[in-house]
Length: 451
Image (cartoon, rainbow, N blue to C red; front, side, top):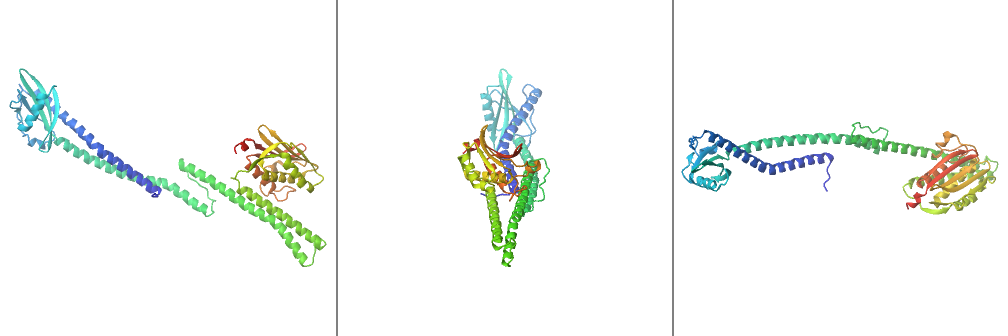
């Protein structure tokens, strides 16, 4: 398939349109024009015949100054003659016997008062009108004729004017095509140059095209895309900076302690204590890396549907309780709604519950509640602790990556929870209750029915 630019397509469209119009005119115009001029010729003949009838005296016609053959050169000349008593000698302009015979035959066969005929004579067409006259006891016919000179002359004139008009129309059409190609191509060139800048990672300059048409709407859509890309780029840069900062601290601690141990200096009292610090920092760095990897993994799989299965809330709640309770043995973890069924991705939902319980363990004073229930066609899960309230200003940014609270560690746990809940088409919100803070997750039941 031939690939054409927008300019080439516009030019080609106008050229094809001009050709189609020219072909249609070339086919239809001659036929219509010939019919119109033929009718016009007969009208002229009838009008002249009426004038002759008003001037004639006792069916006697004056002789014409132009002979039958010479009259072919005149455009609108109408000649007349009479046929009386059948094939008697005609009165008026002399007509060749061959032509007279055909005219007389048509006249004698004519039933009405008026008849219109034409015949060819020596390469020319002769138009004539036969009028039957009331001349009792004689039979008389007034025949008025006119050559095709008028028709042919008018055809040539009208064709010349039509060609002139078509040429002007073609020139005007091509001029409009050139203007339209420039008009349509200019905003595309502007948008294209902006895309070139974006491809070079320069997306600071906004898309602006004020025209009130489709191009302005297209520009607005590109501007929205640019802002999303800019926001994504800024978030990626911020993510890298914060990730680097989170990993830098344990690395510096490990490096400094290892160098001190190598030099025979033990900051924590002895070699074993110093090694314990190094091991602890290495474990923390490992946890940070795991969180980072899982956070990026969830983000990269945002278009992939979770592997949904029916899960009893009590099953995964007990599992997470047994795994995490050792962190603060003095905190009581109470589970309610163990038999509530939730349709979730088991692996991802264990991570959700793990991060919420870890967060609750850092802030709880004595109790944590894990609650699940069905509520108005949706599944609801609540993780609540009896710790101090969260400032309203902090709630808005609580789920942003690397946003750490007063006792937070990496600032990724709640961001991971948010992304997993979003993948399940659910919602999560934080509510300050009278006796603590509750994280409330609601999952639509219909999400599972779409599978």
